Image 1 (tube, rainbow, N blue to C red):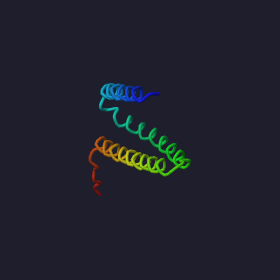
Image 2: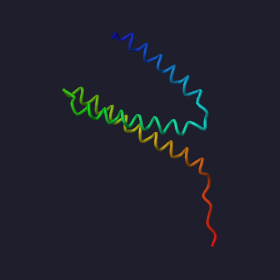
Image 3: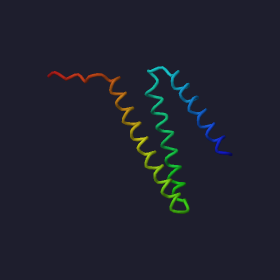
Image 4: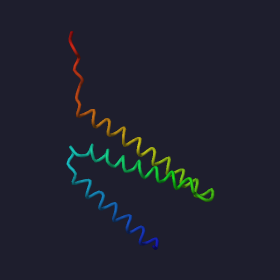
Length: 97
């Protein structure tokens, strides 16, 4: 594939992603984020496997950087999902004896 084709596909994927996400009701954002975090976790494991077979210093550095940023994305996604779930739980009631 040429660079122009790759960039075109990337830009179209951005527009399709924005269109799909904007149509999701707000009540479904939490399950959607949980699902995408799980998918990204699987992709992260694949990145680690590919990083293990990288040949050359440049590929190792690029792969390692991708794994670090992917890990930050997964952790941040779970933190945001947890905060969203806290909003649904409401305040905890104190037990009276």
